[in-house]
Length: 331
Image: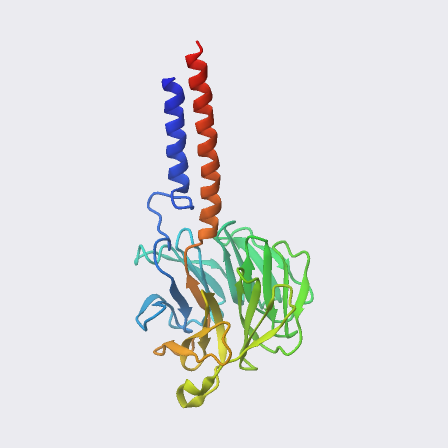
């Protein structure tokens, strides 16, 4: 009986160690978990972190001679990734919130990277490579590079991924399209080809099952169903902007009922998703030439899935203990 109880307690301990917060816990690791949503963005020479409701920014990376365009992060270990078109590299910095002195690693070289996407569940990195017009994938450290797509592409730019369903969405400025395919490049389909010129930013709202994109040439934001149907223009009242300039929309990400959009000349704006003539509120006006935008947030859906599995294990162990006690009492 002692052996059974000890084994059960040990099993519960291991489960809690691995899935304490719905994510695997490694001693000494750091994560965005437990930290409120923040704005990760690039402004050509820096990667910065900003609160959603203030203009107080923290510099995470300073590249100076580079051309930092797109950014992403790994929601388990807290690493940030960014593409640098001038230096022709993709780099990462581990644990930016837990270790300010962490080392910058160059993980991809001799590339002309644009959009990047980090698959935190499968530990893969995807990027649009304008050198050879391809979409590629590698391990997080840059090893095992694979070409996902390299046919019928002209100028691939933006990428976003749906890890739950293994979909990769991408824009092509040369073809003036937005497309999607599976993570292995199969099931490719053109979603948007009308009234689109330079779709620079892509974002997914998986709750409402919609795709959002910015068009830096047409000065607008649109959305559609995930299959490209039901296209809608997101109306923007630009009268509140400095000198009434039009929003040259670049990066975009979503959080709650808001879009967070970068304007190349004046900063980052928060805009209500489903309100006509929504007035953009500038939340970061001290940074210009803002390109990529990403909201760092906890992924509770994955935690919920894991915790559900743990609950099933608890029921199983309870049942095993009950049976064992019954067997002991019958002896």
